[in-house]
Image 1 (tube, rainbow, N blue to C red):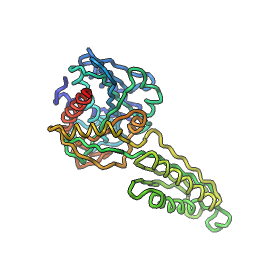
Image 2: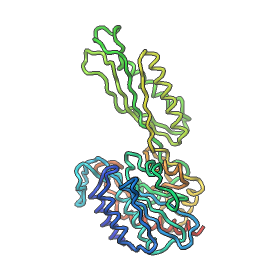
Image 3: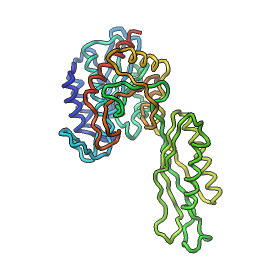
Image 4: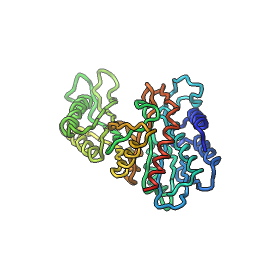
Length: 381
């Protein structure tokens, strides 16, 4: 069974070899070698051809009544590391700036424990690529990875949180992470000379009005007790000061705490774009891409059990948290399988996706202990 010092060495190695979505070949090979070094008596390893950098490990239970799934993401971000750590990223321009190295290490620690202590139920460990982009959770489901004995009856997963004390477990009933939709808007009118606006159809003016109207979608279409966000973060139109722009592009993002809320915001945005098109006599094309980044909506019954266990366990520092507007593709899997996502505190001044993120490594063993304890408890029910 992996010791705390073993886990820290594993985490530091993983931190040095970050890879982007669907390119995690070196990470996959290291994970595979680490799992193969464990006791294989109860383990069955699967490397799906459909999603080559993914890995699934089934721990066969001695009296299985169900299959409990545990998911970890394995990809990194296109960020140049600035931590100054001796085990910093060896891949220029790529970093585990979201803590997936912590996620993987905790999963390996839990798996190592159950490789030596055969569980009652089957346990499925899913090492998932492409969380940061490319919707790895959705891909894995749509490619049919979860079938037969590889289908979990319930699914769990964690995300590290620099705002919580190292090793603390955070969770809440309901939505933990918002769902996201990528927004692309193209306005196509008629270019012309700046001195003759009557002969042109100015897309920059129309874009300005569109951006202003979009600000009312949240304030006037969403229940103020709820939460939603529309951010239009990029606008590109025109080439020079004395030419009226015949094309302008706007890019942004939508965040919502429920799938219903996101669909409401999407529809209101469609209405605004249609109205601008009519008002300014131009074509306004709207592209909405939610991909697999659905809201992470925790299952009520399973989450109640999870929180109850964590609250009642003396060595666990449990903190009830507010929902976050960040996105996570585990939400797609929780829409297909009941389950719970939760936070693991890593106590750092830097935020997720920061080039200076330095999670506290003492969180790893505490996370392993809390999760193995919960899984053992869950299998007694």
